[in-house]
Every structure is written in structure tokens, then in C-alpha cells.
Image 1 (cartoon, rainbow, N blue to C red):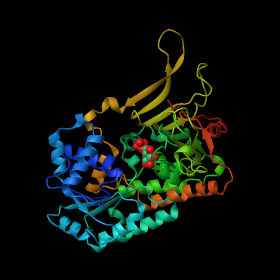
Image 2 (image 1 turned 90 degrees about the vertical axis):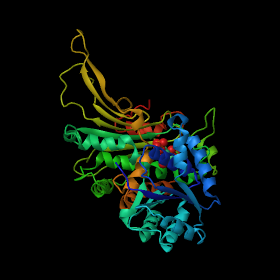
Image 3 (image 1 turned 135 degrees about the vertical axis):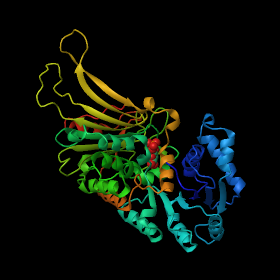
Image 4 (image 1 turned 120 degrees about the vertical axis):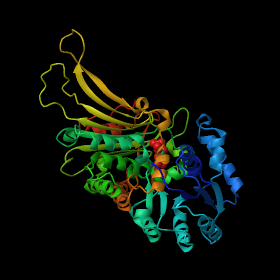
Length: 478
Ligand code: BG6
């Protein structure tokens, strides 16, 4: 889908996110021919660089984060030629006038700002953008987590943003919404008729949402310890996935239609009792230290793992538990959503296990795809023997390599294009904080400490017990 020529300013352009994600994503989209001639990318930050130094830094980032086989050196030269740089200071007027005149000279129809800066800089940055008249009606602003650390700070951030921009100009990124399979979940649900009659409490026994990671927090313990799995993953990524599974069909595939339906899901979530949560920290392994060794505070109670049982209390889902789990230092990197269906009401086959349940697995990573587990007759003359087979749709097999795109590529281009469908609205973010705050407050008030789990395991015993209490089991992590 074409975009209009744009000017994109990246605040915090020398930071880690810009180097790892934003600049490589832009490079790939430019290579794919998505940046019309004359489009410009302007890096801005406090570092005292000139254009050439910023181009050099970007070149190094591309060398580091984009495989050499994906591009030719002429592609990179073309991309670097789009880049310029302006030193600015968020806390003074230094550099802002120059940025304003650079933008004015040969201004392109679309103007976008990417606020890749720490939360403490957002207010002063947006105030300067306003004061120096950088914001036009065609301006979009992209912001990223942390979008607050609780409801109060999320409200304050929304107020700051809305003081300078209209809600229709604000693009809040949750990179999970940019993942291919997440959008496929919407296609699966709303472009096919056969699942909808089953997509409710009458046929679904329960839903599991897992985002497991094998990495520890070593090296980023300082940030992570102020956040924990609840703020880092549940409040945003897992809640968004839950919303997409549970929401009613929107009237249109359009930003506010979709976001209104997601918001209704968050509002329908039952407040979670602390007994329906498990928080845990990983133990030391032979190779590396424990969670407490990887953060500065030896008494930290921050969780590197969370499991939660919740319910969407509405007509469609009443009585269907949604089990969420996420953690670091687990057995495998797996993100998937599983719907476990109820048993058949009456089995006519002695061979059908009493507890057999169909499953629909939506895999976000590592191998993106959708699998329906169903029972069929074992082929051959052996009588009426049953066996489970996966009806498997692997994206790797059907999508040629050259069209697969990373979440950041999709989201940045959507922001430039002016399509907010895959971005969170302010009220959604606040509602999600309201729900997670309730759990965090109970944890803080409790005298109990996080339990522990082995690195490389599937999580703590207590999480297994959370399921076992309901006669259920987590999906295997392999
Ligand atoms: C980020 C979290 O938002 O998502 C990280 O801050 C986490 O802690 C990452 O590792 C996971 O993203 P992905 O796309 O690798 O699953």
C-alpha cells in the first residue's frame, strides 16, 4: 500500500531502540520501495553529531542488525542519503529552531515524530514541539512502552500527549499487534464462518495464552527490576492478545471499531484475586546466576514469571477461564494462544479417551502458524482405532521469504500511512493498567514472596498447581 512522501523525526535516534529496531525497519521498507522520493528521516537527540556521524552510526547499526545477504551496498547508500541529524536538548531551546527550519524547508505532506526517548523526556519534548510549531494537522506521533507504570502515570502521559496532539494523531505501539499471526487471528476469526459458532462458552473449555522466553534478564536487570513480568508483558502484550481472542466482531476493520471492541473486553475482565496469580523468580543454574543475582536489589520481589487465571465476564465467555503465563529463563521461546474445546457430549467410540479435547493453537513464534488438533480414524485395517492429527497451517511454508515483514516495519509504515488499527488507544491502555494495578497492589500488600523456578524449566510448581486445581494442564512448552 503506497504512502505519501514523509518527513520522519526520530527523537532518541542514537538510542538502543533506534539502532536495533527503528532504523533497520526503515531501511527494509525503503529497500522495498515504500518511501517515495524526497522522503526524509531526521535523527534528533542530545548527542553532538553531524549528518555524517549519524549516517555512520546508522550504517553500523544496519551492519549489526540486518544480515548482509539481505541488501546490496547501493541500497544502504541510498538509505543513508535520506538521513540527516539535528542535535537538540529536551530541556532547553537549543537546536529546536534549526529542527523547525529543517522541517519547513521542502516539507513533505506527512510529518511523523517517533518519541524513542525515556518517559522523563516526553513532556519537555512535546512542549518544545508545540512551542516551535512543529505540529501540523498532518503530524503523527509514535510512542512506545513504557506507557506509564500504573494507571495514574498512564493518565498523566495521556494528558501530556493530548495536550499537544489529537488522539487521532497518537500512535501507541505494542509491537505484538504488528506480528503477522496476530493479524491472522483477526482474519481467522472474522473472515471465516466455521469458527464463530464454536467461539464461545458453549464450546470452549478454556483459553491459554503463553509468552515464554528462554533469555534471562542478565544485562538489563536495572530496567527489568523496576518493571517485572506483569508490567513488561502482561499489561500490554498478553492483554492485547486476550482482547483479540475474546472481542466481538467489530463492525469494520477500522481503528475505532476494533479498539472499541477491545476496550469492552478489558472492561469485562473480572478483577483477579491474588489466589489466582503466581509470581516467581528464576533460580541460579550451572551456567548463570539467579534473578536476584541479575538485578541490583538482593531482596527484590519483582517477578520474572507470572501466571494468572482470569475470566471475561460477558455473555460469550462467562465461565471460561483464560489462563495467562509469561516468563524469562524458561525452557523455550514460544508465544502461542490455545483454545481448548469441550469434550464431545457423548462418545460412541471406546477408543476416544474420556478426556479428549480438540485444540486450536495459534502460534506467534517461533514457527508462525495455526494448528487444529482433531481426531480421525487411524488408516488401515486395524478396526475403528482413533488417532489425533494436526491440521497444520505453517506460514513458513505458504509465505515466500521476501514478503515476511517484521512488526516494526509494519507499524512504522502504518503510522506514516495514518492507519491506527494496530495501535492502542489511550483509554485501552488506562483500562489495562486499572486491571493490572489491582493485582500488583495485592502483591505489594501481601507478606508472601515470589516463589522460584528452575531456569530452563516450564515454570514454577505453583503455576502447575493453579491449573491442576481446575483439573487442567498447561500446554507443553516444546
Ligand atoms: C518487550 C519486553 O516488550 O517484548 C521484553 O520489554 C521482551 O522484555 C520482548 O523480551 C519480547 O518480544 P518478542 O517480540 O521477542 O516476543
